[in-house]
Length: 206
Image (cartoon, rainbow, N blue to C red):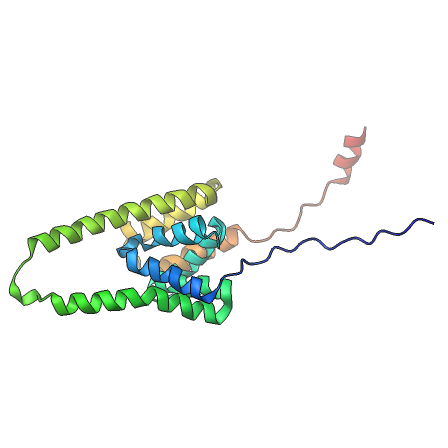
């Protein structure tokens, strides 16, 4: 009598094991070395490229949530990523790591910089240069994410609609998010599979 083979359950993908100290130090480094809006590029480079804690799809999902909620995108992203990887303690560690360098640097800059003493052309030029670099970092990051995530006409249409709504028609961001998001949900809503026509099925057998 042959022995019955018991099917083994399929392996379930598990979240990477991340230590709280590693979480804190990673976001501390990001917070200390990122500039302006370019923090998105640093976040993706660290979380997706170096640490491989997230993939591009997960990163885009968390970044989308961060952009739709009030507050700074970088702080929102740190909280969401920390919570996904290590729970509540991870979100606290990531948020502290992300915010601590900015708190220290901006406090020191506020004390050192006195706007009443006149213009500082070198400081102004440096800020313009940092702003331009930040724009380039953001563009490069979203290009890398977009070429993997944007597929088909609908995705391109919704992106264009959001950009035109905010930049050209000057509609507030919450209104654009609600409007474009509602249309996107309707377009990607789950659909029932179409029933096959019996006559067509019979004719295919002939």
